[in-house]
Amino acid sequence: MKRGKLGLLSLFFLLMGCQKSKPVTESKGLTPRIQVVEEMRVPDTLDVVALVQPDKEGTVQISAKVQGILQDIKVKVGDQVRKGQILATLKSPDMADLYWQMAALRTQVEHAWRLYQVKKELYEAGAVPKLELMEAEQNYKVLKAQLSGLEKKLSYYGGGSGSSIITAPVDGVVYEIKAQPGEMVSPDRVILSVADPNRILLALQIPQDRDVSLQKGQRVKLILAGRSLEGVVQYVGNVVNPDTKSYSVYVKPLCSDCAFRINQLLSVKIQTGERSLLVIPSDALLYKDGKFYVLAWQKNQITPVQVRFVSSLSNNRVAVEGLPAGSEVIREAINWEKP
Image 1: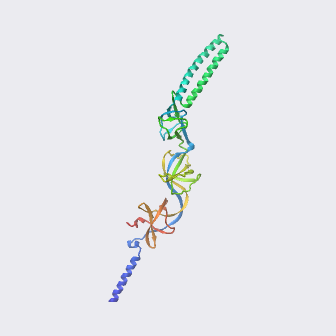
Image 2: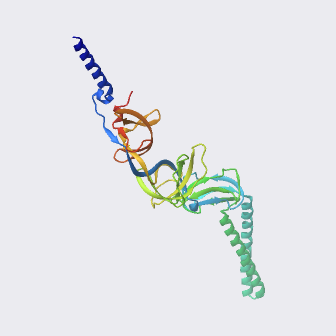
Image 3: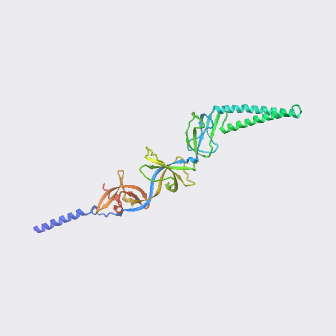
């Protein structure tokens, strides 16, 4: 009887020991799907915000041609304008002087023309010598040339009776307005600028903690709104914006029909090349409390391991950092996550 009790006790402890050594999965009656972490060459991409800005070479800075007080601005930022369209008007004492000079000179020209006609009739009648006729004709021609020059000057300045108009020198889009009605303006002060919408740059905002190793002249691949296009780096900024913790990289898109609007904000994925990263199925990645992690399968045990999400890939895969190549992770990890 004693020997029988000892045998039952031994069997009991043996079963308890077996249950203790079993993985948690078997106790649930489930078998985890295991995936080996692979190291692969994947596109090196970065999701950034880009601001559409005009190329400086395609932007015209517009100033007043005379000094005066800005009266009115007839356009706003983003407006499409045509060459010759009136953009602003200003009041100028200089234009008033020129206008009244022109009016007085026009009267003198009319008087000189009438005098010339009289001298011509008198000469034909033999009443005056030819020298008087030639002097009258010369005086008329000189005054007429002066009037023509003054009219051209007023036309160049866009002047009228004490006012001057500012017109668009090219077709384009109003990019900036740097003066307001009531302000004094002069030829050395820019009032507004008009940009060619077909000559633009994308100002990519690169986080300061990402070293993307971009250089001037480098070709990059851009993906935005499901569209893929190439671009060339024009300039890499070296000043970090303290508010956004980012610096600007200016890229010229290589497309003839980009259809971007100046000052438009875009979400852009930029690809600068390839690099070696660890790749796992997307269902092996978990997110909790602002962190990414996976459930690693180590010695028949599930161990949560924090990782850094890098990017999404095709075929329901993601690239991560923080795991050794060759390690194993649990697929459908959400089913194995502890509450």
